[in-house]
Image (cartoon, rainbow, N blue to C red; front, side, top):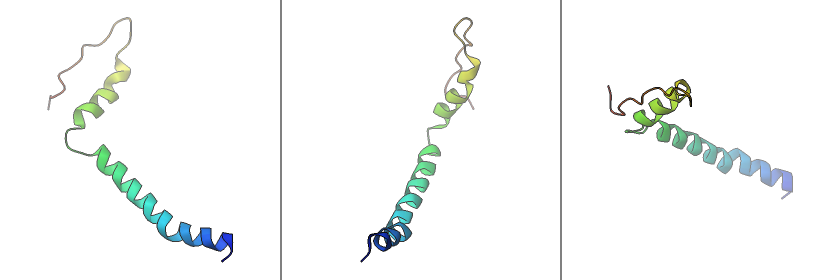
Length: 62
């Protein structure tokens, strides 16, 4: 089998499956339970600075 055909067949089947599973895994990791506080802290980090830091809020606020 020619190298191009072999790589094309691999990319069309297993590599595509690997990328789909990776994408789903990243989505599940980002939306997992308990990560809300981490994401909120990262989103609010731009409002803190070195000269006058904003008070850090409780991580469990609703």
